[in-house]
Length: 156
Image (tube, rainbow, N blue to C red; front, side, top):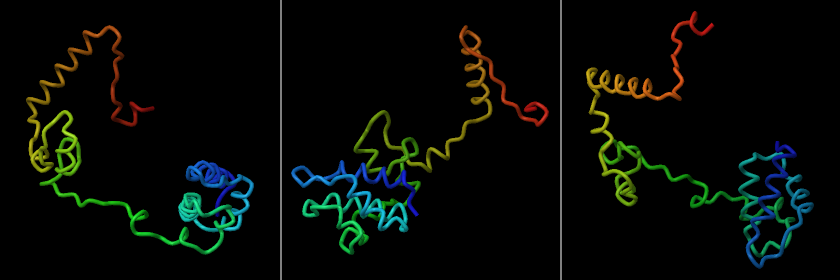
């Protein structure tokens, strides 16, 4: 069941989404049409209304509650594109598939996720990095000390 606020939001989007040159829809008409289908899910109504609003042949929002192609799920625009995670072909730095990482080539070269995960920071290196960070913070006059509270007594 749609709330009044959701109906107003969808109405605003639909009125704004009309194609260039198409007849404008008035908001009162959009609200009246959505009211007739308010028992449906937010997702269903939003998608159907936006499809109808994008149809330049739909002169009025009266098409919204009627049966039509705007209510039919289309595999092309409803199905999210899901790429299978493969640690050998997913970049362990940016998390993108290898082909995408190579397209954007920002600040790094592709490195497979399984290789990044295999690199472990040894305890000595971790301690050295932590000590260096503590020294930097100690030298910064504006730094505020922060201690993580671990026990219930400390958090009280």
